[in-house]
Image 1 (cartoon, one colour):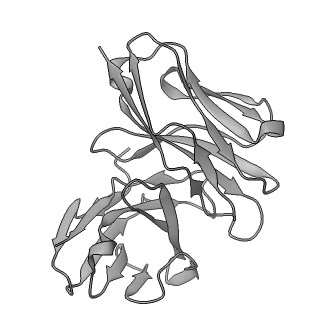
Image 2 (image 1 turned 90 degrees about the vertical axis):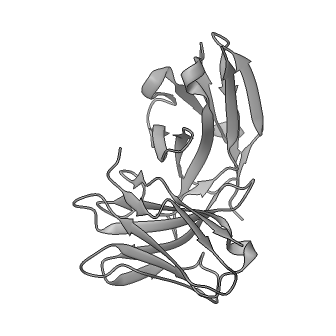
Length: 115
Length: 114
């Protein structure tokens, strides 16, 4: 079965620290990759997405992610976090083929940034 | 964005009652997806609908759950005879075409069954 793994359930960082959240997906051929963020009480918001081309993707709010095909990974990074980045982050994969309109989500990583 | 509207935001039901969750897609979007997030889990696909058609309901529990997206009005996710295990956050997304390349999510409805 197709699956997405997010390595960390809860990450706590001080402001200005660097962030890297891991995401691995099971093999399934061609994929589209997404990172979403959910701030407390708000909707899921798209941070960035990868469909093809440059494997280093830049998103909103200073986030970026790197697609490493050989490792089936799509890790999210930010060089310097802010208190306002406190939120839950979800990695999601859209697999090609039957049911390709679905997203398969990881369980999410809660990020707490301490001022 | 506030384009995809879900209501209510919070819903409390007693066991055995019915729950109706509504999703109004963004203007111009005719494709709707419902996802469920159980505690400590990621979002899981439930159903994909286009106007007046259920395209894929492979993620829907076989009993008690149904969904519709009428020609006019919001998409409705209906849960009959709710049980404690139905307590979850239910998210809706909409897109102008098939797939999530241009999809937006709503804020979700948190259902609590007591």
